[in-house]
Image (cartoon, rainbow, N blue to C red):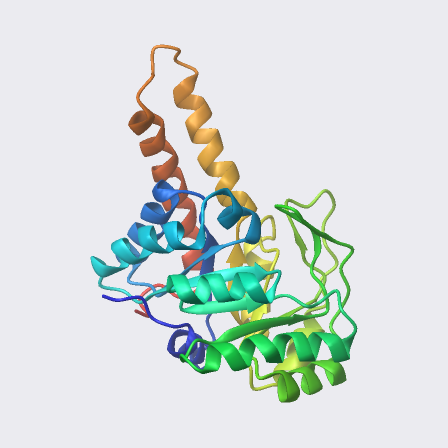
Length: 280
């Protein structure tokens, strides 16, 4: 089927108290793996690219890969720009055909974040594409993004939702991008509080390395979209290295296939934790 937006899938997740898995892709094999996992589990799925990923290739090239796979799929597939860093990048994603866009103004003061997000939301609204905003930074490092992090202030989140025009909201509750060196201190009660104050579906960034129980608890409290990135890269790379240990291997398809299978199995396990299996 054609690519879809995240609106229907996240609203259904919100009502059904589960989350849709959102998985960052780096190449064709990872895109194949993620959609194959969604097909096997009958799950809606979101594929994402970051600014550094599309700098390596382009929004058009990644969109073309995912759109071709989605046309052959029987489950809902959305293509999302993760951590959009500029208005111009959001324009590029929109023109390429992305069906969901994140603009990350979380480092800005509240007033500037609202204005920055609203400008993108107004542009995307003209073509029916939903926008994810962020308030209360997610710490750690992902690609060339690095931040100290910070918890979302509920009253600011309410204003952010009301004035920015966003559809979904990434909230800061103690998670961080990348793998954790020490166990994170999650403010799960904050998720419960925010759920009672917001209508926007809430997004959890920095899920790679969290325990399954922590992810499930965050979802039970109101998270509707969970992002996974670093652990997919690690699984892909580990599988490729194992194949390349045999110096006789020179066919990229051989190690690409191994990486693809490793990512598929990991994505399936994360979809089961999110509870989105059987929800397509």
